[in-house]
Amino acid sequence: MTVDVDDDRLDDVEAVAAADPREMLRAVATSAAQVRRGRTAAVDAGLDRLRDDERPRAVVVAGMGGSGIAGDVVAALTGPTAPAPLVVHRAPGLPGWVGPADVVIAVSCSGATAETLAATDEAIRRGARLVGVCAADSPLAQRCLAARAPQVVVVPELTPRSSLWALTTPVAVACARLSLLDLGSDDAVLETVAQRLEAIAEACRPDRESFVNPAKALALEISGSLPMAWGAGQMGGVAAYRLVCQLAENAKLPAISGALPEAHHNQVVALDGPLAAGSATEDFFRDRVDDDESTRLRLVLIHDDDGSVTTARVEASQELAATRGVPVSLLRSEGVHPLERFASLAGVLDYASVYAAIGQGIDPTPVAPIDDLKNRLAQVT
Image (tube, rainbow, N blue to C red; front, side, top):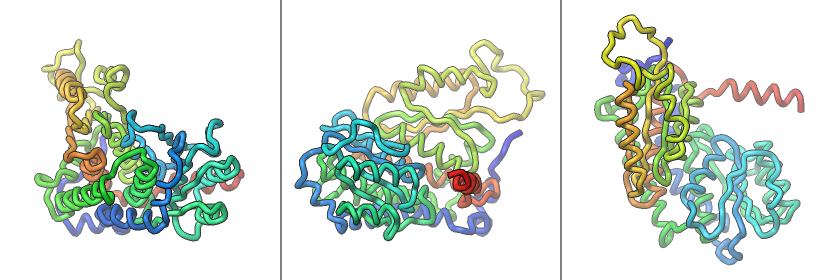
């Protein structure tokens, strides 16, 4: 059985609006504004004072789901050249080594995520420096106030997953003030990111037809497939992970993420598996009329073109997939700074995940299984 996206529906503006009653597309379109507001909120919260503190031994970003990925983005930004490690923590409490020499950045769009609150409580207990990124008047905000820790106020855009830049920007600013990354004079890189996201919003708007809309085109390409998204380059891996999460929450579709070169040591063998169209040992030109119309693998290459040797691996991946009859989608980054390059990828991917939902006639906003899980867990805790 396959689940296909209706290209006629995607190019019908009224049908798109009808399938998106809570306006997820509008929320995604606010990404540039989120960057600008996030930077202002970070400054208003007093994060500039972090410059006066000693450089931390390590930075821990505690967050879950759509909030936790803000840590992944900044961790990829800081990379191996950062003077201190940045660790993303997705669990209650904190690693045993965290103490007064470290900084904990607690990120929760709602400010009420149980795991993040537990990590915050542990940071306070151990005397670690704390920064909160959360909704005003929330439990996390109250903890920051009691601990005299800075709290960046987040105004969410519909859902945490559509508030990526409202959450990521303050974390990036905090790490810039801690000298873990460089955002340029007066955070000029953030304005470049905002302008890039504005250009993507223009290119991916609902009234642009599929043949000139990169997000609609990608949604149609992955229609009826099991996408295996491989990220390449500095920011490619986190962009691939972002796509998988967005497809699950928005389009209610499964996908697989990996990063090069690691995926070449394990996931690549799936190109010879039962979901691939062909293999190295079968006749690629055989008559497939009688084949089952089952879900097939599609390789989605998300290339952060950072000038590294991963370019050769991207090209080899395309060639290998072609020899096995596995279709390939390629998205290549644009821009100079790695955060701008990530924006050029994530911006299109976020839109594509929403169009993948709309093309199936699915409302992208509700996440009923998450709500059900929360209710079930609340009954046993």
